[in-house]
Image (cartoon, rainbow, N blue to C red; front, side):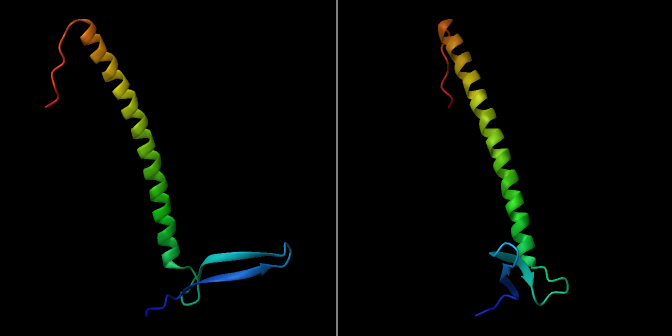
Length: 86
């Protein structure tokens, strides 16, 4: 079983009397920063960006589908047969 040098440290904040969890602490690195935490932050940031892009793409797809529906209706109203897609 492999043990990770990165640990989660829980400290009691004496001023506010509440528990603060620090997940970015590694006792075995020079600057005490956890590489897994950095990787987690980068991945989370990339997922947030991808989510924003997907949402924007979906809005554009819906808009374009509405336009296609309008154009197809205009063709039908003009008596033009719309060929099947495939």
